[in-house]
Image 1 (cartoon, one colour):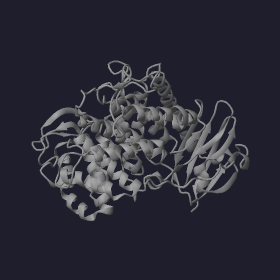
Image 2 (cartoon, rainbow, N blue to C red; image 1 turned 135 degrees about the vertical axis):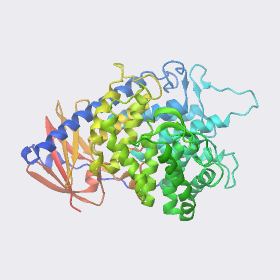
Image 3 (cartoon, rainbow, N blue to C red; image 1 turned 45 degrees about the vertical axis):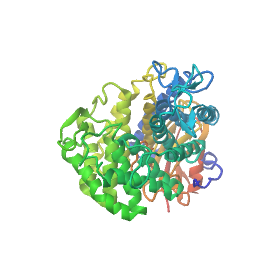
Image 4 (cartoon, one colour; image 1 turned 180 degrees about the vertical axis):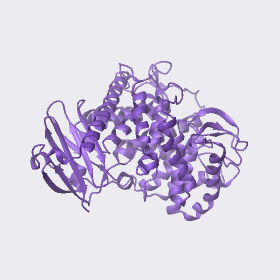
Length: 543
């Protein structure tokens, strides 16, 4: 059974309690300037994401309401592993954060249509063809459906699309769809192992499943998900399938790197809940990471796309845009075991980005390469931002996001394939960083909310071009309230936490010369504002 966080009370009318701007000089000029710059950067990212959303909605099939996988060869198809996993799911998130009515209306209608039209084996989805209004992969009467294809599509959809929605929004109808698909992925697990059946045996799908079941163990509190994860952990770490000791190919980019971070997520869960398994996994997992350190990275911590881990031969040159995804595993293992050599890799990656990787063509000219590189690094930066050695990475994010955003066409379409959703995902992550996790409701094109956190407090500046009334909503400690994790560790496609508010905490909110104390529930509900040009706020945790 899914655990639900407590509801928060009604809005706090800060605009009535703290009238007028007043005493702007109380804010240090540096903070004011940085907040304004962050607000402009966030506004641009939101605008790009909003244009993307409506451009893709315009491409939806008239009868089903679903979007095509791409605008060329896949225009007649809705593929769960592409259209749903990487594109439509992030349309859902953009709508939820910029147009609540659209999210509650059309996005839920699309979910109902997707569930009704694509569910093929129980709740497992398969590719839908618009022109025939049926499944694209027809089978002869009595023939079996290709379960490998169906399991792959389901796993992609859950891990890449539905899980990020849950992590940011909490329990919704999209969570129910995620749980239903996951139930059936494991219901139809048919590959025998000594520990029990598993649904796949390739690095990509098993890596995705390791990530999903490890998180579902915490989300639901159900032991079976951790048991499923341990089946996969035993398969890769305790038998003859160890990725570096027995494998001849190790991908350090997508379509393979999922396994490395997935094993680290299982290790984290076992370290807290199955110490016997953690003890067994520790040495082979360290051996995997240490071999990557030996033959898979350069002096800056960047990783080759693909290597032969036994000989050390580079099989695919070029630096992986998934370096941050693999870095998640290094950081997580370091957090569990205190191994500085593993954390040092992450610090090295972040410290060298601005000096050596400005303008690097991740995956050539594709926006998707920039999206993955920025996202992976930003998620790690959220953990290490107070380390002096990595602060230069902030300038790299600011430069590379401009390259990525600049790839969007005037129409709002980016490149016309499912990777456009990853563009939107990273734009949202970047904007929320610039706002330190705070959101604006209702969102509007001209709003510019910027935030800067220092040792003492959070400074916010909201500027508008026309009068506006609404609220600033603060971020919760989502790894605790939504995911129920004992600690926050970096996860692929996670939306990082920046300035977070505890429901039971007390906070001082200062606007000009006026201040008031509020509890955390009030900030989580939202500070109501009515402004004509700009407002500056200072938020301090009291206890």
